[in-house]
Length: 391
Image (tube, rainbow, N blue to C red):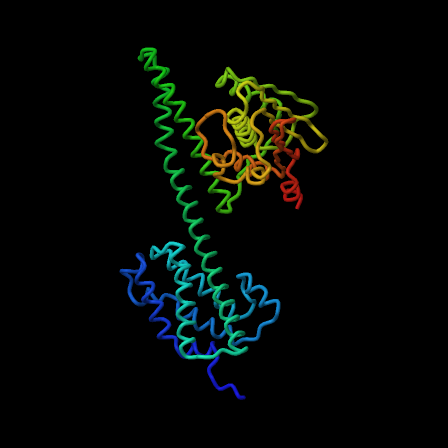
């Protein structure tokens, strides 16, 4: 028996207008689409439909089919055009105020419209129709995956740029407030009570300043700029002594021990390493047992130096360890016995970025026997910088 009815791809190309009409109606019923023009509502939809149909008619290898079934591109001219249209559509929808759920629901509605119209035209299906349905769903999945990827990437970039701008603009007025509070505290013109208030204001300002610096460092690394370093000869033993003395003054009730062995010199950014150690020790104070000592140790080993920070306290679950250095997971992932304040869940993330920028590694282990141990390995000289200087 000769097949004389229309294939799904040809049906789509012949019925673009009624399909677009249903797409437009659905988008108009969404909150973000209620005030948009017809052109805006149909944004890139016609291109997605036409490219999908042409992609369905093009030859496809098993490898391309496998990639599409996983929501990836199929490696072909039409497939590339489908990715491009999907990316542009997602970015346009974001600009028009559509949320991600609404973008996804558009694809669901588009798929349903095509299949309902086709079902009304084709009363009995055969094996060719099954193949066409498979190709159509693969193309729709590819387009949806690319739209979601493009949408979320643009949202992440916008959020991180906002954080960077916010952090930058807050620094100047905050520095002025801290400086004013410190001048008042040292002026001798205030009574004891008001002097203490001014000192606390300055202290809180320094806490806020560290949070802003964390935000700026976070956005710098997430936007691809990397962690800037100013490398010079550093004596890690002296740096550790200075940092721990500051913590002893701030937390006189806590016990902090430091042990050193071997050559602890290297080519590092002293300010950044101070940040690493401060974040690790501050983390130990916040989450460790108040009655237990915090042990800091530094040991020279050939071309590298090992730095460890150990505290006793609740054991960190093994399922949490892999994400411990991710941003903004501090509160959700780590048990806390103390409230140090001033943290936004970026300390460990930034510590890792600084260590990586130095060409080193950072790891954590936690058990009842050893406590929670953060281990930093720092090469005495960054191998990447060495190769660059010798090039």
